Length: 224
Image 1: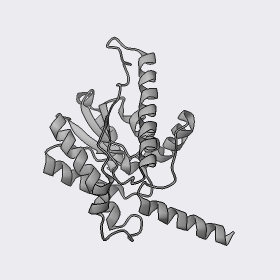
Image 2: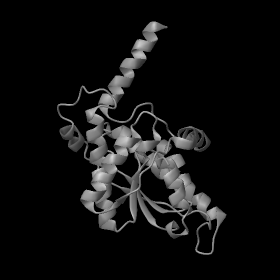
Image 3: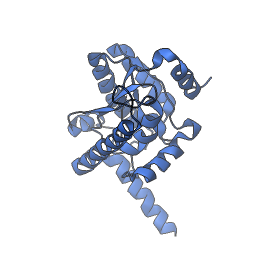
Image 4: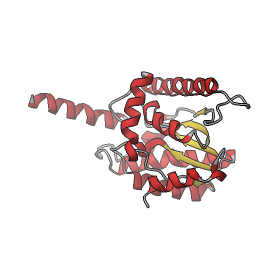
């Protein structure tokens, strides 16, 4: 049974209903499918912690879009109504905005600036964000923590899950393994992005991935 099937099985357990999940989110488009999928079972708090986005204007834009999207989902939750003020079949979503310290990311990846996407620099970045999420989940008494990072087909879900479990053990909080791109999750995120008019960037976030993306674009234009 793969990770995606295991998550489905876990979510079918009535004992899971209403458990608290701290979900690290990299951006609104990646969170779109994940939130609509998980909010039927879990009380989610989104942690927007992405110091890898070293361009402050880009960071603010993505953070604002995440907040806007969660607001739209919560409005939908209210409209669907329930005796406790929220929909009977979904839970409202909260968000925590972490402090923005891009210099911490730059210091962490020093010496790995020229690594290609999916290389060691990305592993350091994953660990940095998952360690922060695990710590806050432990402090807040959450039942689980997880990340939207596994939605991307360009990211290694197995590696992300390994790091998540390691950081969960270190901080004393249970990591929820995932592979959100499975079962058409990534395609659904594209559809939801269109439906909600979400700002969708074409690079992960750091200046290095942006430079790599721009270089690929230039090479593609030269071959046309």
